[in-house]
Figure 1 (cartoon, rainbow, N blue to C red):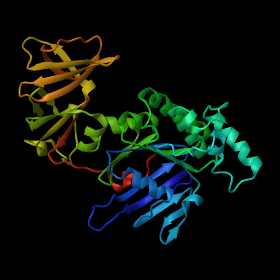
Figure 2: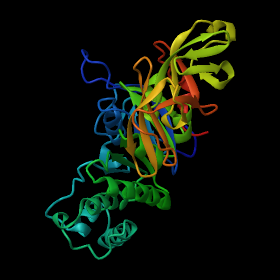
Figure 3: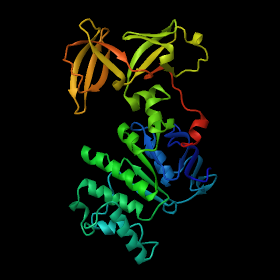
Figure 4: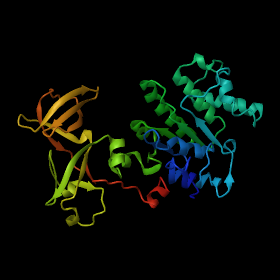
Length: 375
């Protein structure tokens, strides 16, 4: 384990019954001090189970969990949750309705600290989340955003080694979520606190995280910077779930990828396969990934693609397109590109924006690539 690593998981597995597939299957990763890791995946992929094992609410069948260089689970060792120096922020806030703001924030301090110390840390935590003047209010007197700030202050007051946030913004209105996710990141960075942020919202994970780990059916599908996850998906699942891209059937022939919307030179397409020579690609079939924002629409009365619908999203338009075969594609363009429903267009694609996934490709990162989440 590296000296600056706050968390290290090694081959962690959790299976709730022999008849069921593992909820978490052989996961290895390392979180560096001060970083925020976004744990992203669909419902039921194992995100919360993994978080609960880190917190100590569940024990792994196999593998090791280390916090700040200390073994807390594995090899016959088990450290109780209250002794792991971990803060928790839950989806439902989990505030005590009969305690005011100050009392809720101080709850985790009273048992082990002097009165003077927990008063100082309570004041400090409340100021950190911007709730000065609301110390005597009760949860029902606060907005949802304010309640979540109280929950964050309570988690930070003991100055934990690591803060775990389990979909903490999912119960809030959209505008509050947008504001709070930036505020949560700012607070964690200001205090130098490492965090794991569980979400199934792709944009949320990409915006708040230093590193993103994508999970699928208990496995770690890919881990890397938000930019790498978005631009260089390691599998068809990551490409579909994170980028919400278009996938067009393609076949390789005569050094070109052939599709119904056009042909593309081999050197303009990244290939998610293990072929070492171009000759090995000949007649290979699969799907070409094209991100929505990388499709360029050219009005053309003889075009083989038709605009089926247009949605105004403020800063951009979202177009639903129909190819001659009836395939549906999605494109996002600047508002300067105004096309009418029913209009015919030709399509082109921005350079270096394509990736090919062979049929039944399920590539996962190597053990070396997931051993650490930061170089």
